[in-house]
Length: 321
Ligand code: NAP
Ligand code: 8YV
Image (cartoon, rainbow, N blue to C red):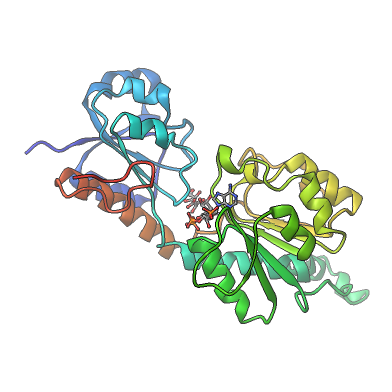
């Protein structure tokens, strides 16, 4: 039996690439001296894409037009804002992502980032290494005690974050487009209303047009001068310019950011601020969890080409037998 041809636009973990090689004819387009020409050459044979979130190109109309026999896009990551899933659905192309296998890892990191930001853990580490403890103790920090936390997006990961926060004895609220059944946290139908009621916002929604600049200047003003923003969602969810202004002017206290508008480029103004904590999009980045995500990406392709349907299709491209 011929092995289905699968396109890769950027590298993935070696273990994931080995598994793809075992089952498919994999075209590593970035390795070609002229990737565009290489893509045009293999395009008619391509039936699947193994899509890395670090892919230099989006899976959208321009790419779909090149691939007349495309059946499935298997994405690495639960977020799929790098795919035009609606357009894929209209063309009968299935899109899959990697939900759930990363909930705990991302939630752990979100809590770590929250505490690191409030208690200035990276700053105190830098202080000790610079020999400054010999001169005087590190200044006292802000606290998580008596904080009210508002989660923007109480989905799979948002719930895992909330569960962990319960152990910290803080007040938990959430905002989303719909009230969730079976949770006792305070629901806020508007984000501005929640920002007024809490003093920490944790963003964990999808990216894309529907959430673009959800956290804007008005929301940051409502959060207030003791306010803390933690963003583990997507850079696009926050108006980065408004955030920089709010941090500079003291409109909010501080921020912990794992994601940025134009990754891996981070505005110098943020880098120059000592009171913020900045991470290079690492929320799911443990060997354990990234391997789990890679396995699910491979499982989606394997199951599809075995005629058993996708394992985790996204809502825009539901599996109908
Ligand atoms: P999920 O289960 O689909 O949850 C998404 C939540 O966002 C839902 O509760 C949804 O509630 C809410 N939401 C969607 N659109 C919204 C809007 N316009 N306004 C307010 N809330 C909205 O997804 P998940 O698995 O938890 O993942 C969430 C996201 O986290 C991913 O899409 C990705 O962007 C991000 N993520 C980041 C990392 C990282 O490395 N930093 C890792 C994993 C995931 P309603 O439908 O009720 O609005
Ligand atoms: C990505 C993420 O997988 O799952 C997501 O949506 O943002 C991460 O877990 C990461 O960007 C991989 O490079």
